[in-house]
Amino acid sequence: MKRVFTLITAVLISAVSFAQTDAFKTWLKNGKGELAKQKFANKKLDKKEAEEAAIIIDSLWLQEQVRELKGEWGKMILTHDTLQLACAIRTFGMFPRDGRSLYISMHGGGECPKEVNDEQWMNQIYLYELPEGVYVAPRAPWNTWNMWHRKGLDELFEKLIRCCVVFEGVNPNKVYLMGYSAGGDGVWRMAPRMADKWAAASMMAGHPGNASQVNLLNVPFSIWMGEHDAAYDRNRLAKEKGAVMDSLETANPGKYIHSTNIIEGKGHWMDRADADAIGWMSQYRRNPYPKKVVWRQEEVLREHFYWLSAPADELRHGSTVIASVNGNSINIEHCDYSRLTIRLNDNMLDLDKKVKVYYKGKKVKSKKLKRTIANIYNSLTQSGDRSYAFPCIMEIELD
Image 1 (cartoon, one colour):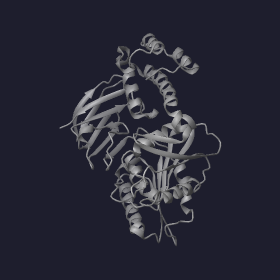
Image 2 (tube, rainbow, N blue to C red):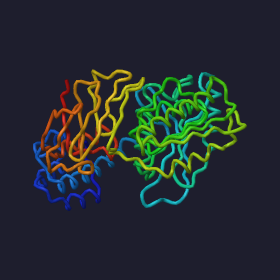
Image 3 (spheres, rainbow, N blue to C red):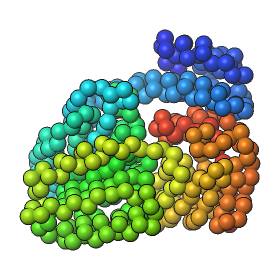
Image 4 (tube, rainbow, N blue to C red):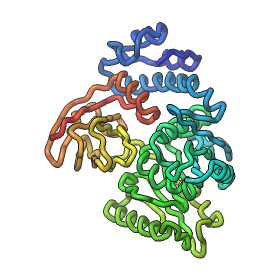
């Protein structure tokens, strides 16, 4: 991480009192070598020291994000490899104490000429109004039927969220996903795939394809469909998926919160009845550290999900992990990988005590973990999400 100095950083540095203060200050002033490779970065911290280190690292990370992203955000065109995501933004309401909300709203269209998708994008920009928040309507990078769930979109959405956190004052725990028609197709796929990013999601008039809903354990999800929207069996499938969510919620009381709304007398266009989804979503906040996680790989594979990471060489469509935190124990009910990385912080359990890991009821590890600056730095820069700066990391080998 390159050094970018401001008054606020100097104030934060002066407030730090942990044992590695002098070495950390020297590194900050001289900027020699990567932080994670410094000896002081791998020394043990107590809870207070880890919290103070996280504040400084977060401040430096934010400054670096400003430097890296200001050009793209200024043009409102985000890039990943050869892909581009043009964005239109509208801001509503007063700035809340806990930061702004962000609504990412995906347009319709699909396998049609560019001009048709451009028109759909223009329509999406002004389709909804917010009581409060930042409303971003991105233009899909492709003109294909699957334009809202192809490989590469995850990185673009992550960058979009970072930009809104850094430049628009968005609270990363108040990020919502929505989309109409082909955009609704995207919500069916992207809501489960990136479930660790959303506070809630709403699908409008889209087709679910073969997407699974099991990852939505901690993401409230609403379905909006016209009663007569029969093309591609959308109306029938919406009801069926609603029933699936009913079953999931019944089996997991308090989880899989959802709402199925079949609008009587309406076809593909619901005359804005679906705008009620905004108020419904706004009541929810993301919990970045849920006690239980269900993680199934979708068609586009991801290495990280909430506080879990899986080996890149073992990722397969359908591979699943079910894990939970109970007291000071991690219980792995199911895992399709030979090993897992578990990232932990003091919000999740007591890191001053031993953390025990059980796999299918059998204890596989019991260890007192070490909080380090390197762990905080590595997990933050890897995830690009301020909530996922973890001071402790456990590597678990499984049979």
